[in-house]
Image (cartoon, rainbow, N blue to C red; front, side):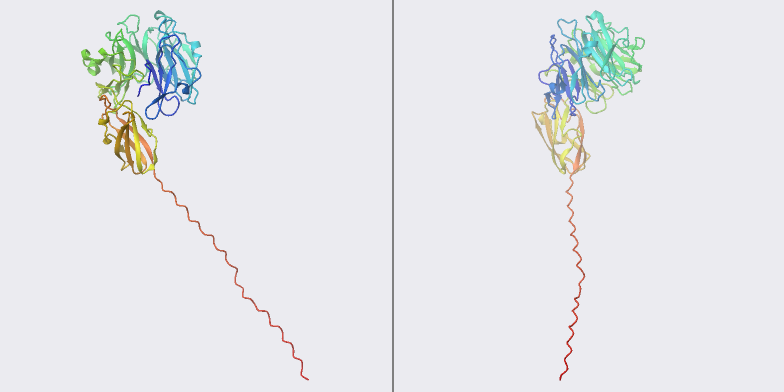
Length: 498
């Protein structure tokens, strides 16, 4: 995904905010000053570009958080459209008393509206983190919030309980009483696959750093209440004691969901991914070194900036969750930009560098080639980074679903962001276009992620001939009548001769 110019935010979220079927991005570029900076919504465009669309989407006041820390995107008011919750630390100087968080709800027509009422129920503070999910099976998305107000010794943890319309009430009774407030990361994830959301938290990790909690899981039971009596403390790592992000997937395909935790030293001078394998239900083992780090002395995170966000997602189509640094909002040129690690399917990762990804096609996936087949068509594949033109061949794209459909050529255009393939399609049907992983490389040699998309193709239909009009029947002439001559006039009786 191409970076949006001029932004370097810590807070980034994704959603189709204007309902055009193209993913958009929301940035929180807060500058730490009391005045703050307005959030930015970059609207996705066909071809992979983004345009400034903040005022097109947000009606009325545009929030300007001083210290955006995280963006949550979810349907808080239940209308089927994505809403936005911005976690705000507040001004960096002076830090206390911080600021309130920001809520924008959709109007159901492609616009978002700032909800100032949230500021009346939440205490101002230095919010570091939040996460969202339906904690009590109500069908409504609730929010867990960490708030240091007004200083780290008087912290405040709470849930915002949703009434289903995006109206929230503060509830502290659902938070474990022993949970320390110095949390930098939290997620609501069903880690043990019991259909209840578990609360996973981390921060300044105890016992490595004083004042913070251990990294731990509070197991959900479906009631929405979490307890110190029902938790698991995860293995610590005192060399990398600050927890910044958490994700969970079954990375080794054993049916149990594992954890990957993003860590950094106390001075935030690098990054480290801790791999915790769930060896049996709710039991975890730290297997970071054999599965991902391999050799700590040569680990790439030793000499890089910290990583805010990462995702476990299948990037190459093999069914295994790979690890990808989510740096969409970061400025180009950072040491950790676009990094990825490929999962071999058994939970062992290999560093791949960056990933080259398809972000859009023309026609759009699911869209129709026009005019109806048969015909010759242009098929544009748009990438998140420039490709190496020398790596692009017509054979990189394979077609299936319509017999006889072929790729006859390819050109690299649009500053090398687009590969434009030429297709011959002989008839209608459902066409699938695929590019295997590693077929095309980016300008720095990064391999592409596997891609596949399906497109309906309408068959050519010859015009229906106009029916030949049936001539009207000629009227039946009247029957021929033979004229009857008039009777002869009677001859006069001759007069007798004298």
